[in-house]
Image 1 (cartoon, helix red, strand yellow):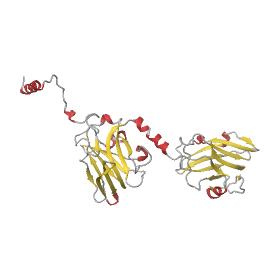
Image 2 (cartoon, helix red, strand yellow; image 1 turned 30 degrees about the vertical axis):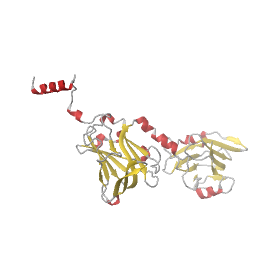
Image 3 (spheres, helix red, strand yellow; image 1 turned 90 degrees about the vertical axis):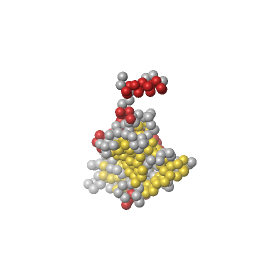
Image 4 (tube, one colour; image 1 turned 60 degrees about the horizontal axis):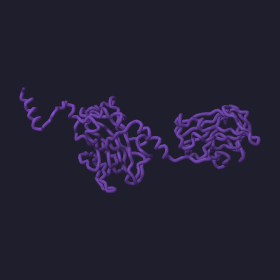
Length: 357
């Protein structure tokens, strides 16, 4: 028996151990969720480094009996502004098995006014100099609609958003997290840490944001409304307060209207169950209707696909809004721009246009 084995045997006898566990060199790396709590920033963290130069300040304050970091910055005159830390005391960390089931959670609060954005570029760096970066897009990652100044808001940046292969960072040996500050901001940070987070949880963020967004109102009267028609229509003249006289000529085979004085119109909350009601003098002509938003997304329906009901010698068309495929065509439901009418040959009076249940 060699000297090493004798030493091990002696140690075993002294400590009453009954078995040995094989230890590999790589066990010195951090390689599972259970071994450490991966915290970049909290009330106890003291190893954070900062590079704010003359473009920002940082200080710890007590808010609601908790120690939090106050960051105030404006990058306009600085090339690089930011801070960073290692959640593993600069021991190489293997996060490869966490790739699909973890996220960076940021607890943040606005200092003055509520804000829509948090201009952070979050980077993961390894010991070979590789790095991967993700922008903290609140439209994707915020658990809510805005960063509040009265309560803590949560951002979840999934680890799968980092492009390890293309950007060249080694997930088996992460050194630290670096946060680059862009633009300007004034926020409190309570915590930055890795937490369990899967794709089902991520998929729930957008429905929650959608449920919090302002809803549109019904009914929406498009015509008759003399003020709106005279201020918010194009391509056609109004000859009467009681109807729109649509006679096709070469110059006006297409016209449109916005019924909110050209401010965006909100369909949110009823885009799948409301109807567009159109009352006309006849059903003898073909025409199309185009619904569009302020981003240029649009879709068309053909009046020939609908059967008009006869009411008091007029023809009433009922067109479900869902036929415009607002969600499928990515029409922004709270930024509707206009409703357009187009026909090659027509002589038609339109008595009313409205949106209702």
